[in-house]
Length: 328
Image (cartoon, rainbow, N blue to C red):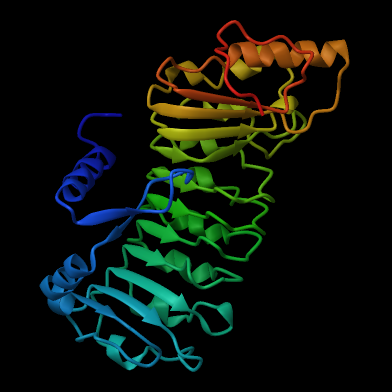
């Protein structure tokens, strides 16, 4: 991790707040991630200190918004909040963060893109969105776009016009089948989360241009014959990746020299790695030999603490760098 980057500073701030009992842990030890919740009295204090800058619809049709000073808003929309901006938000021209908890007909009202050009963060994770309008490109200053749990199959190409976008979260988008072809244009992107997206089986060519990425929860190797799909070499320059990385479709890599292009040894901030050959049923000696060569050249950096090996033939030789770990 580069000294002084925003993720490191954020982690330090969170740790300080946690140590001073602003948050308490929730969930159990089997959770993949540490989850925390803010203490009610701390939340009440934060709301008080925020004053007119923050508002929340505690229930449909009500709001604590105070007009032009509002910068952060969480809203439960009514069924008729489709054509006009809800009254309490009509003066919030400086709005920076907007979270919508319910959408009429699971569609984003057009005024979101027209009325709030200064938005930095848009959270639609509680809406079961069926389509993200192409007008999202009007939010030129947007840095964070959260679409977790949406039901669309693809994103509009205009998402790639959001040049300031730093975080794109698509976790739990179970019907998502592809990412925009020009996603490589989002050169400021730092976090691309695509956990629990079982139908996302192809990544676009050009992903390797996203050299500022810190989070890439999954990468799917395209078939060798694919012209538009991402080959494993797209990972070569993504050396700022942190945390966990899953690489699927390794049975499509045809040579160990191709796998070497992923340069996993250069990714010093990765903590865990999952290497998946995806239900490869071939036991032909030549196919097994290719997979052995591929795995041998995927040696990770020594900083990686956990390596999971999935769907690798039982008859295949383990690589020289392998440390016995529970194999799935």
